[in-house]
Image (cartoon, rainbow, N blue to C red; front, side):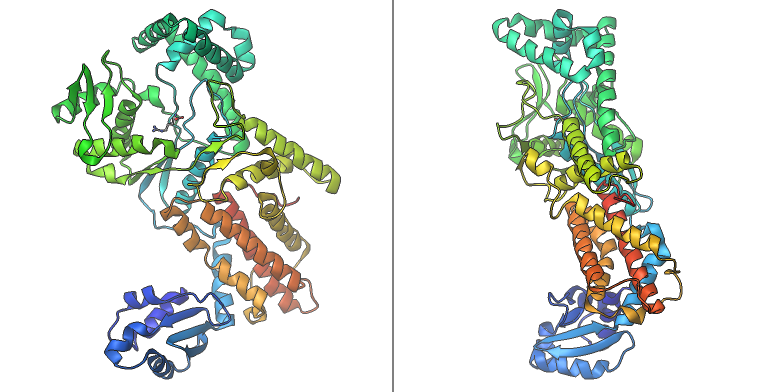
Length: 565
Ligand code: ARG
């Protein structure tokens, strides 16, 4: 039962001039829940009733009279304040959760619709650094959120595995590389020679020409070039996958830039036929002046393609291959212009579905020393951060709970969870400066706090040997702490929708912290194991509902919930 809808229905039967939907839209949640669970402002009715709002409110109270689902209806100022009958409310919420069990939160709004979530999209042979955590975790969470809403999702890692930098890497490898060293320690070694290339090329610009020549070879399927490239790709992916598995991140596809290298020709033809491009100094561009954007360079003078060319091919391929309802790109806000150009060009090509493409952007991570720079070798590896966090948590466990079962695994879940939680706690658009101290702090509103609350709930349920899922006396949950918790638990499905609509995982992260706080308050105020068996059962069922909600909420933001800590 959705109480807001029920109240709208009730009011609709008493008010002529507004329909149910309009009434629904006007209903508010009072900030102070002592006032009521819902409020309806009567100001809009003043004209029609030719009366002051407080009087209208009074008359409506009379008209409504006694209703089973309501504890009270009061007129306060120009408002009608509704208090839901506590027992009815508790029953409705908890039976809803008990009914769905571990699936609480699952919905069907997205049924039969496909959403593509492209995220992480790391660059081969380059470090997987702390900056990448953003796209990776926001994307992985959105993928889970859309799934929970019932969408069919496709998680794509649009690997940066193509482009002139591979020419540079081949030259660098041939000059200074060691196969053995790279096999052992792929990315740091590849990074080392890549950085060296840039240093040397300052003195010897002919290196750049060589690099271009090798990239052309690669484009023309030269055997040596291809083999080196696929080896770089393979060893890099192995390393990325180690980090993905630490983070619990999974993809359905790794079709990256190289995948589109043979699909661009047809797109270029199409663009030429549709007269979207013009030739400018031997290159082909799309003029976007009319839309207040700089021109997009599509082919270079030498005929080679660019990043955006591959993205055009990718978008069209995705539409044909997946018939998506939405195509989401989780990429930093530095690429705002790129995506605006991309979507506009698709529109100019006559693809109405360009409207279904969304750039989900986010702010930058920098270091105290300045922006991260791969070329200068100024980066913090993501894996290092995760491993350090795990190490720190291990110390805490060894100190506080040395006999914990499966403690290695718990340390990983909590250490990684702490880092991920931090990442997803703030609105994604915010820039931030990475600090070791912050990444490794576990006090206050953190992942470990929420995980610990979950483990505490699990422990209570383990100890109780009562059936808390059937024949519950819901009238026992009428104290304020229980009611506040129930009210918040009931919002979970809406919260997930909201997070999906705004592509904002932090909505879930914050919600879950709120639940943990309300749960801890409830737990502090109410002894669970009492002599009153009915009371204990009712409270246990609320503990259970809290546990499921926290667990599922954490899951949506890609954080595991150990049962013991
Ligand atoms: N590899 C790119 C980078 O690291 C991000 C790719 C974003 N996705 C896209 N379809 N362009 O900057």
